[in-house]
Length: 256
Image (cartoon, rainbow, N blue to C red; front, top):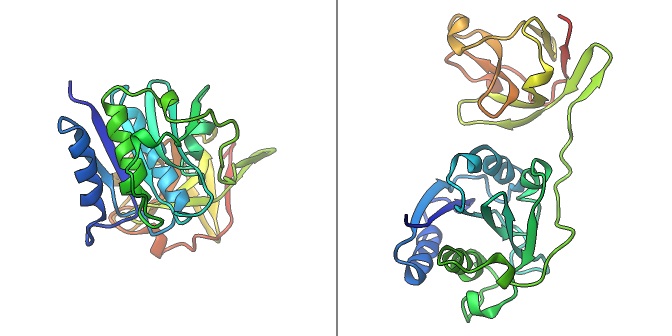
């Protein structure tokens, strides 16, 4: 089976950046299958890049190589890294974009990319997605071991992600992500929320969980467990982000 390489960036599709990365990969390994996950991560938004990675990588076959380039520190002293987690390989900057991978994995091995054999000879200070991460991914797809890239890294950079907090009969959480449908994804894991819970967000109260958006009439607010495994606030055929202020306090009454 031809190796799979996924690409997740904040480059957009207007410019040449994504095409240049694909050209480098295919020049090294013409048999590589390149899958575009998203190039619409908001510019420099490392958290949204990290959350996107978290929500898709586990659905790919083992040995897939995932390249993530959301890299506002490009050209600085930040490290370029590759990591192996349960048969999956990730390549990108050491800036926290792999935070969820670290937090939700039992073990992982991280290596700083230093071996000049696997990167381009002329390194740009502004486009290391093309010059470092793309060629490294291509060489890995040909069977190069992550351990051949450089020395082991012990303390990677992690984003300061706030977790929900249980206080007696309440869970205190917050909105951490807004998807393209305007759904408000919270940091409250599904397993903490009971079907009869009451959800308080700002001055609004939602009674119980819905199993689908169609459980309520068009335009009505609802709470649902989303595909990412977290509690979400949504509007049936509407945008919850237009109805609720994202920074409103979010409380869930566990016992209803």
